[in-house]
Structure formats: structure tokens, C-alpha cells
Amino acid sequence: MNFNLSLIVPELYFFFLVLVLMIQSLGTREWKPEVEKWLPFGAGLGLFVTIAHYSVHGSMFYDVYKVDMMSQFFKIAIAFGFFVTVLNASRQPTLADEKRADYYMLLGFSTLGLMMLASSVELITIYLALELASYAMYATIPLRAKSKGAAEAGVKYILFGAVATALALYGLSYIMASQHTTYIAELATKNWTFADSPMAVVGLCLFLGGMFFKLALFPFHFWCPDVYQGASNETAAYVATMPKMGAIVVLVRMAMFLKPGLEITTLLAVLGACSMTFGNLSALAQKDIKRLLGFSSVAHAGYIMVGLVSGTVEGLAAAAFYALAYLVMNLLVFWIVSRVASDGRNLELSDLNGLYKKAPVLAFSLAAGAFALVGLPPTMGFMGKFFLITSAWDHGYNWLVITLVVNSAIAIYYYLSLFRHAFTEETSPNAAIAPDNGWFASAGAGMLAAAVLIIGIIPAPLFNFAITAGKDLFGLAISGGAHH
Image (cartoon, rainbow, N blue to C red; front, side, top):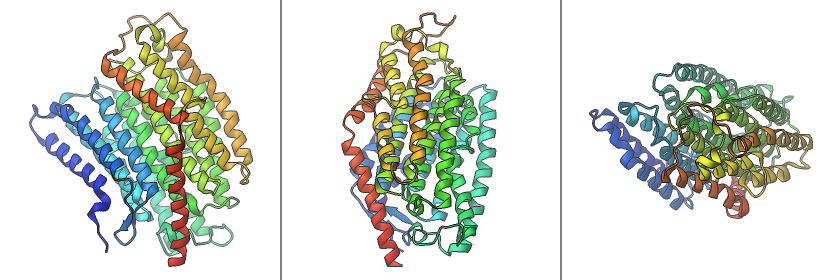
């Protein structure tokens, strides 16, 4: 069993971070609120460590744990997401002081699980890492002071999560029984047509169901709008972005044996099309901003399927790039939601009225986030959709690409209503509490908005990183097949 500590420096760093948080959460009442004085620096250092470590490669634990370009790409995204989430949650009004250290400890555990998920290349390891990432979330969602909705959201998430987990385990047993291996590299060499190995195909569908639950892909999306609405704004920012990274990295690794034309690939394409259409049409009717973002993430889950079904290096790279774009765009919009709702309430669209007068930096950043989510140039969202469309065209799923374009047109309506309320509506609702307009709020929003625009204008460095990662995966699949 090959074990090499230098391969897992980012995971070890986050593990120690979680240990420190755990000690602090066990401490006296005076200790607990102190966590916010040092944790943002700790999370920032974690991002730095992960980026500095990106060129390391190798595999461990009998090859179930692989550190390659794809895992490094997602680990950097996850570390970045954790850093922004910690900054965002450090001004959380609905979290009791004595629960602060526990809250961050749970977020840290979840992040550690996602980091491990990024490197897992064997189904049982994937399952265990996914559970580590999930269990912490179950406890985090209800942490919202005096809120029945948060408790309800927590219960829904746990129940749906339990069902999805059971399906994934059941599917895993089918795959093991019929293909006699759980290594992704070996599974890539097996036959996945329904005529030849029906049991394996059914098993894979069930196992992927567990990932679709995390991704909120139709028809596994029921929990999504309710949980966003019930959880506090800052927790919703984490739930809306980070677990999706874990699900996407697993789907990207498993998409290697989904050749265009297989029944299971066509099923993914159909689910993707349903997800986009259902998510966008449901979002049109929403007034609560977090529910609107919930349905929008159902639509984005559908977009990512476009890259996964193409069966090409570019498709996998486009899915990875779009995952990163999704992370940054949503963190930006949730940052603004959390700042405008400075008392921690849920925002309606009308709460944004006249934002450009009260907090111009927040209003401008919201516009950047909304344009990016629609996919208008020159934003990250536009480049992400552009890469998805070009990678999937002419690989047998042109109808899916056309569905994506039509859906992007529908989405313009509700994303731009965010913009419309912030810039053109004057009458703000009565007794509105002023948004948090300090330097901290503006700096965070400005920097995330800048990231969305700059990566949209100069996407090449990140996309090339993703392409290299995709080639790396396909190279491994071929050599893995030859090796066994």
C-alpha cells in the first residue's frame, strides 16, 4: 500500500483546521465567538496551500486515491469556495454565538469530504467521501436562530439524502456483482450497453442518482428550493455551491465510459434537457430570491450534462470549467443577498428596489452576477456556456445544445428582473432595513464581480488547465485499460 504524505498536503491542512475548530467548539463559552478572528486567515492560507500544490501527481492506497490535474482543479475551486463562504458567514446575524465554532467545524468537515471526493477514483471510496461531505451538511442547515423553516429544511434534506444514499449503495452492489470491479479505470474498459450487461447499467443509473441528488438534477431536485429558502442566507450560499463541486468531479470521472449513443448517455441527455426546462420555467414564477436561485441551480445542473454526454476531452473540460464558473457566480449573488439582508431575513425581489442608490457597489456587482448567470458576454457564464455548446455540437446530441440555447433565452427574463429591481424600481418596501454597505461588504462583492468579469474576458489559463486535466483523464483510462 503506497502512502505518500506529500500528495495530500491540502487535505492534511484542512484536517488540522477542522481539528482546531473541534477543540474550539469543545471549549468554554467565551472561546467560541473568537473563531471569526482567525478562521478567515486560516481558510485563506488553505487556498494558498492548495494552489501552491497543484503540480503534484501520484496515487495512493492501492490506487483508490489519485492526485491528478482534474482533482487539483476541483480542490482549488473547493478551497476558494470555502474561503469565500467563511468570509461571508463571519457576519452572520442568525447564528447564536455559542454555536459559531460548531458551525464552522461542520463546514470544515464537509469541505474536507469534498476535497477527498475530488481524488477518489473507486466507487466505495467515492461513496465514503460523499458521506463525510453530506453528514456535516445535515447538521448545518437547521442552524438558524428561532426559525421553523430551517428545521423543516434540515429534515427534508436528511430524508431525501437518506433515500439518495440508499439508492447509490444499492446501485453499487449491482455494479460490483456484474462488472467485478469498483475502479473507474477498469470500469471504463467494460461493456455498458443494456443488451449485454443490463444489471450493470441499472446499477450505474442508481449510483449516479446519488450524485444527481447532490447536483439537484431533475427529478432529484425536490429538496433544493425548500432547503435554500429554509436555511440561513450564508448556509444557503454553501449548500448551493460546494456540494455541487463534489458531484461534478465524480460525474466527470465517470463520464469517461459514457460514449455517445449508449442508453445511459441518452438518459443523461434527456434528464439534462428536462432539468434545464423545468428549472427555468419554475424560476419564472418565484418572488423569493433564494427559491429563484434554487430553481436556477436545477437549470444549471442540466447545462453541465451537455458537457458530460459529449464523450470528448473538450466536453469534460467544459463541464469542469462551467462548474467553477457556477461556483463563482453563485457565491457572488449570495454574497449580495447576505449583505442586503443585513438582519438575516429572506429577501423578496422587491427588497432589491432602489439598491443602486443605497449601495452602488452591491448593485453593480449584482448586475455582473445576474449577467453571468444568464450567460451574457463578457462574463464567465458566457464563456462557460460557449465551451459547453462547442464541445457537444456534432456528437449526436445537437437537440440538447439547441435546448440549452432556448433555455438561456428563457432565463434572461428572471435573472434580469434582479437587475430591474435593483436599478429601475424606486419604491422600496416599508420598514426596509438598510443593506450592509461597509468596506467589507463592498470589497467582497467587488472582488467576486471582478473575478466573474476577468475570467470571462481571459478564460484561457483556466480552460487550458481544465483541458489538460481532461486529457490526463483520458490518458489514464487508456493506460489503465492496458495495465489490467
